[in-house]
Amino acid sequence: IYGTQLVFERGKWYGIFPEYKQPVPTSQSKVIALDPGVRTFLTGFDGEKIVEFGNGDMGKIQRLCSHLDRLMSRIDLSVAKRQRRAMRKASYRIRERIQSLVKDLHNKVARFLVKEYKVIFLPTFSTSEMVVKSGRKLNKKTARNMLSWSHYKFQQHLIQMAQRHNVLVVLCNESYTSKTCPECGHIHKKLSGNKKFQCPQCGYTAHRDWNGARNIMLRALQATAITLTGDAIQIQSA
Image 1: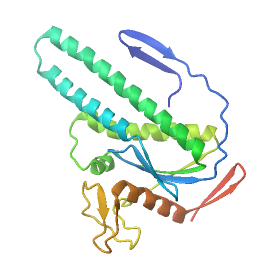
Image 2 (image 1 turned 90 degrees about the vertical axis):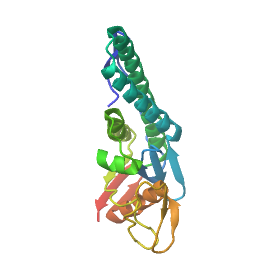
Image 3 (image 1 turned 45 degrees about the vertical axis):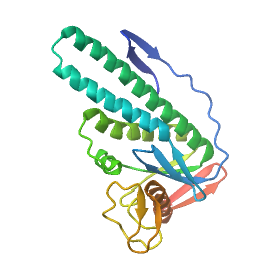
Image 4 (image 1 turned 30 degrees about the vertical axis):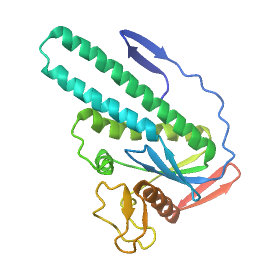
């Protein structure tokens, strides 16, 4: 995903050739379930604690995407050629900044995960599911693309890095995990964009993303049987 690249930056083309180092297999045997989000890039639960990834980074990326949308709208309305040219150059710089922030976030999070965990449960997701998680309508093209490609590209990057470190990434279904009560099993269908999950059936309360990560862990462990023997991993579907 982040291999050899041909990049156009400020009027020049650059070739990027990564130097791969021999990976060191993780010595950990821990398991983590991840819940992809919008306000927080990822929320993880490892059976003991909640871990949040990219709180500040995702907010910065979203603000840049919104700024880019506004700039593109101004370009469409502008009649002066010189002004349009200047705004297009500004839009290229913003895109470069967004791509750089996303790549840096992906690398930092993926490196931490493959170093600290042996098995990673990661849900598959669609753009529409990420829009629902945001709790608002996202009509602008850049914002919609950010929600989809940043998470999907991270998934591919994490899988590649995990393979080099002998870490297993298990893709799973996250349907209703943020809306299901882990205590009584009730599905709270009217959760909408609320940050907090509060079960109307039994009163259980938790942060929505924390609840989602915990339920992803429970569902994944119910659906799979994992055996760790040294560096070897065996997984069976229930």
